[in-house]
Amino acid sequence: MQIEQKLVAEVISAIKELYGQEVPAQLVQLGATKKEFEGHLTLVVFPLLKVSRKKPEDTAEDIGQYLVTNLSDVVARYNVIKGFLNLVIADACWVSLLTDIQQDEHYGLKPVTDASPLVMIEYSSPNTNKPLHLGHVRNNLLGWSLAQVMEANGNRVIKTNIVNDRGIHICKSMLAWLKWGNGETPESSGLKGDHLIGNYYVSFDKHFRAERQELTEKFMAEGMDEEAAKERAEKESPLMQEAREMLVKWEQNDPEVRALWEKMNSWVYAGFDETYKALGVGFDKIYYESQTYLEGKEKVMEGLEKGFFYRREDGSVWADLTREGLDEKLLLRADGTSVYMTQDIGTAKLRFQDYPIDKMIYVVGNEQNYHFQVLSILLDKLGFRWGKDLVHFSYGMVELPNGKMKSREGTVVDADDLIAKMIEDARTMSEEKVNKLEGISEAEAQAIARIVGLGALKYFILKVDARKNMLFNPEESIDFNGNTGPFIQYTYARIRSILRKSEEMKNERVKSEKNELLSLSEKEISLIQRLAAFGTAVAQAGSDYNVSVIANYCYDLAKEFNGFYHDFAILKEENEQKRLVRLALCETVAKVIKTGMGLLGIEVPERM
Image (cartoon, rainbow, N blue to C red; front, side, top):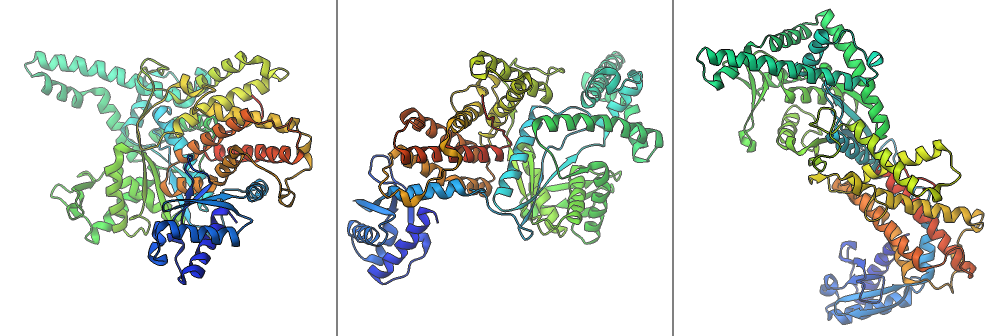
């Protein structure tokens, strides 16, 4: 049992014996003692004064005396500062707690059973006309990490992806490939499939702009004003008309168009898979909008029949949400085609058929906040029991400093370029520390570079509260000092080096019964307290949907360990019991760092 739990139970017993009344556990408020006072845990007495009917100082004295008498193995002594009872916890109690944490294989994690709530998390959501970019990187890392955190909190988790594989943007790439591709393939070009198709999307846009400009000038020469000429040029562009015709053929299941669509999409999916693998993320189930939009239309028509929605004179179908404080929302266009909302309803229908979902979490940027407000109401109206309580894990934009790591297009930062650059930078930094990596193979050196480079990228993005916009600075992220992934990874590697050198760790474990006379330093106690807070951090990250809590916990733990390491001998400590406790601290800190960083999807290297 954790020290806090023991104290809460004993304080409740104290109040019953001292004042003859039962109090709920919520009234027993314990927290870490402020640095300027002696003590480890502080009881706030003020909520108990109605029961004691005494002054704060007298109430604190009563409870302090009771704890020292009845819980002497936990409370060594106490002091009272006004309405605060500061408790000094016995050294043997801290060692016992350390032993419990050290020996708990799944420390900080709640078990998952067949009866655990089922949480589905959607993230990534790419379009098949371009490769993944920096925004997708943040999305994927947040989604993957949130899935790990929710599982660590005792939930069954299904990780899903919805791929936008239909629409005019897909047809633009297809048409450009037909016109200017000359049969080019990923194999013949040496390009990843998603990059190849992305190039043709850019190519379409380039030709379309030139064509539109030419038509605009022609119409202006005929006497039209510039705005009208542009609008007419957009409508009459032969290239855009061809793309629209291709979309119609796709909707009509034209065999040639569908075959081309399937072939080009297969190239893109192979490219996506490479990027996902490099990032270390994946999915349990992938949905495709080409399969969900018809389901959505069917569900909307069902809602129309039940009177949830209404049809306008032009044939379009709408939801009136003015009673909910929102506006009216288009669900089907006049020509019967669907919008994104319709597709999301269809996807929800399929997911509900596939899984008995208890909670649905969408990892989508904050520009879609209103969309998910509306979707929640619509799903609830349509009978999805989790619709009303769906969670939109809304996150801010991520950008790079101007001029850095521009993509091939020069407008967005390509995910593959970013990953490669981070690994390259990590390798360069490792070579500068070549004396620390002597005797390792080229393959090991490259593996370390990959772990450190990706760790720097992931940690820098995940340590920031997802709701905030952020600036990702590659150089700052890979620093071995400060609040960075490499700093935490280096701390772990340092500990593993200590443990490798320690013969005592082979068969020895700290035995609490041998530590009655063992004296701990405040830094050692503080480090044990920090370790004891890991479960609380995991729980908070899950309840708040905030993975940055885990990132910053790992940094605080690594920083505290480095302070301890700087001030105290470990292997050279002559007192055997102290040495064993310090080695136990090392082992346990390493374990918790590995677990915490694992929840972020970050590996930790055995050496750096």
